[in-house]
Image (tube, rainbow, N blue to C red; front, side):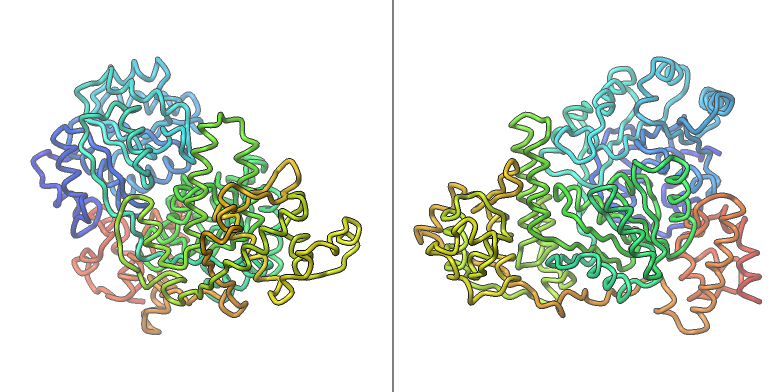
Length: 603
């Protein structure tokens, strides 16, 4: 039921959403939108973006229309809102004609607080006509970075959303995104006609996430060790670039007892839906996926996100790793990275259909990501700097916890670049390393490379270090792969200064295998931080939640987040009033589940 607009936002926050206080700029944003202003909100995943439009929807007259790009996200948010007693619905392709008509009638009759709709549907003339016949409280454009043609999640239909300002100039609009560099922010403002909007930029920092990037060396084995040692039994996402690699990695992990499921666009719809439902409804599922998975997933207790392949940009990396630890408790972002990843990404850029300007932007974005991977300093400082946010070393990334060694690689770089030149710029790193280390392979003798002056001049450096040298030479733009010659390395203009001895080259030293093991993640809302009796209570509460979620056909976190269950187990309340004091329990959930929870605790 629509709240009285005279009710204080804090009162609604507490009684409806069950939160004792606003976070960051939430209260200021809510007040601005409620009073009729437009806003662009940049806030990290897990920072509480949804509340910035959901709460004004309960304060303003009419229905808030939420533009959302993915069906899964709509369904989960609507299910969660209904649990709170909020009148919410969605319009998408999962509804049949009768169901869609019923939702449209509810909108026209003013019986909805929030309506979620895909941008494609919103732009249909019939839908716009329906909006003119209804009372609209506000427009919320979620995942607003999808409007950027330079972005990692571009959606052409988002370009048409400026029509909302043209046809409904008096209705406030709020555009929200978790990731946008200055260029993308400007593009959002221009394309959505938000020139008069107030801009709210929260910190992009996710202090609960530990960032770790390891040198790739048998990546699947490294991944398995990471999961087994740091996240046994935890929910997580593993990203791979190709569908084939997704299938193979999921099957391989399953043979080692990991509850791993594949997810990619090549699977049939029913299988994808089944795997997504299991990930949302069960504990401890690991989904191995292409980047198509995750954008619409609102699961708060993902404890790790791993990358077996390099993403395309820092925005993509930030967006994907941000799916870990949405509940604010400790989580890991782990990635294995090698020269092959750099070559692969550069090949994809060169072979793309875009024009030269488009490719140049993509190369710039890739260079920024490579800078993050190769940095010997704090990962978080480098990451936040990309979004224009100054920071200090975090003490919670791999480079802060165990600072990498650096070394003067000038002489090694000159040898490597000379080898590229002397062999005709026609060979990849594997062959070049063999030449430098003086190996008399059949291929080397066939090409006569054992007669070159560079043959054997790098025998004092081990193979792993040479791999690291060539990878960093590419990352530092001193060498470039020729994709038409199957990844053969070529010299760049910048390499001349190195060869002439005009610049020094400092590199990260390759980490020994023992250092690849990630530092143990600090545990959050889990049984390991509770006393044995309270940990047992948490397990019982999770079992109860699972049964309740199954009976309602909703994800478990829609009933209660892990952090709320941990709060209940820790406090062990004896009365409804005590239970109501726990964050995440609003009036409707207290009414619906309070007695059952108290009975379970009493037993």
